[in-house]
Image (cartoon, rainbow, N blue to C red):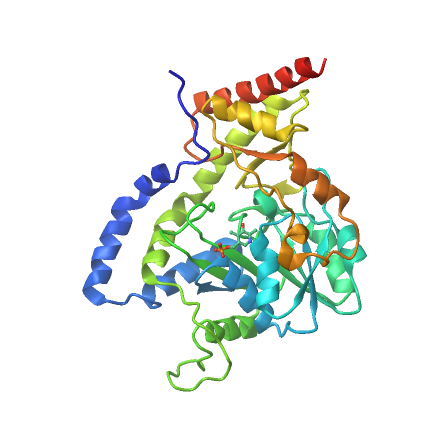
Length: 375
Ligand SMILES: *Cc1c(COP(=O)(O)O)cnc(C)c1O
């Protein structure tokens, strides 16, 4: 009998913190402070510190984190926001929700991340901001992107929803622009027991606006004065307590993910299988382990027949989805090609060496099989 290899194993992560969260939840049931309060503030303090920012503002999810950041920065109708087309659709969606227009840009063929050249090519007279995406757990060259954004007078916002703990040249994900937006959806590298998100920033005024926007536009310290047209995007205490219990373990989980990635990389060296590259200045946290293979569906089917689960991130680039068609100002050949070739392999902190070896073998076998079939 072959042992199946799941795509990820949330259960193993939950088991590590379950006792701690259980105890915190029992205390909370005594106080009924279900939303906001000390549990949320404590997590916000530690998350800001972890990201090297002055403030963290907890919100309901990662999409809201981006939308509210744009709104708080005054970016909305009439403004364009440049975003790489190779991203989860929420990056683009949040721009539309803020009332602005996404403009899609191409990516680097080695990392599949936004480049300064692609950013510059997508700038128009209406561009107000760039939403940089740390896709798959790796930050792009934020030095070059930051310079290009500053030169064009653009706000620089980071979608760090897949990159908790990643760095570029030592700078933590979320800390490099005006704001960094995080999702704590359960399967992210740091995940809650439900939906959750946060914005980190070192701009006191931006943090204050975000705190108001997430809570019906309330003025600070007031229940009945509403200064902004806000929304309800509050973080609840259960999620904050879960994140507080998980945070001290995040770096160890990241090291485990990186060890899996290193095994993949050395197994595929010299083969036709390309693992997305990690740039020299990057410390990637491998939210996903993405390879590129020419005959993706056949490889995927073979792995599936061997009991190995895979994913595709993402089969359709944003600019080909109906709501976003026509929003690319230039052709996006790298994104279009990658969408046909990318395949995400199993990647989770508790993955065993044997599981990793099984995946490596099966991937290489499937490529060997492909070659002999072509010959
Ligand atoms: C998960 C994710 C989001 C959205 O986060 P939610 O919490 O699901 O709203 C945004 N951007 C990227 C890149 C993501 O992976």
